[in-house]
Image (cartoon, rainbow, N blue to C red; front, side, top):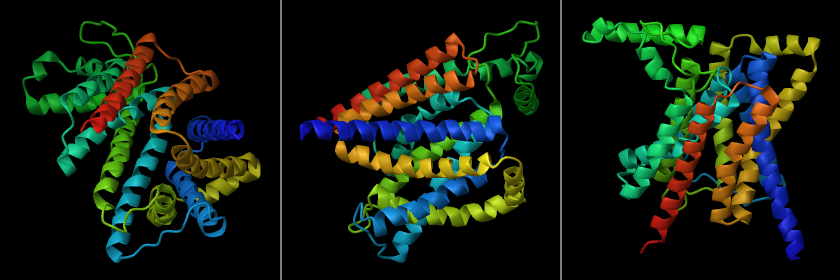
Length: 358
């Protein structure tokens, strides 16, 4: 009996890893390598699959008891969460067009930093000073992984303009734009070339990725603040059941406005290569499996096991993505990512110790 339970847990963890890493890599392939440059439509496909499969899992298969929405206020709260949720997913997908998976995961690892910030701002929840101290390597690692690209861009601004706020700001914006377009190592006024961290650094992709990470953290804090009343708490499966259709309602007009004729373009692509339809179907199904397996792994493993597996998952995704896409990686970038992961582990350990205190 214990043996079968152990194999069941191993199967769950394998499915969790496979779905998480699989959807991430397939998103990257579709949006960057394949040339399907429609992240909002792709996210809408994900949410449609989550809506349908959540209903099947809960209403038909009875995997978890159905929890009903009891008031308009609760529905409004879930709608707010859904808007933040789909914004974070769209932002993550957009960033994959411009950034390699390895750097995307490094930036995503800073979620604890934004969670701590939002928790303090929204709930006035103070952590111990040691917990805040562990966030330093989390943020520092991403700065190192980016290769100090921000400082590189600053060197493009003539020193004589730094004293003028208006001129400095304009030069800085133009430097951002030129760096994002050229995506090459800039030279300062003396012709010195600075060492790169992330060779494929892209300013717009970096900003979108940071925004998506912040939105993901904001959603988790907002969820803890909004759905706290008796009878309003929902498990993750039921919450997805209600959030996904609302997200589709938000994404349909966004797709029609920002990605005009995407359906016709997709059908035209399918006439030339039917694999695009299979890619979208498999990708959407895996997006739901990410949520399902996350729920099941959380249910069938301990908090410590989940913490260790979660920290390792990002590293596994980075290694696999580098092997598949063969994107260039610098030593500086890898050291920065390792520092960020160490910071996340220390942060998680500090949070766990503080919860255990009387």
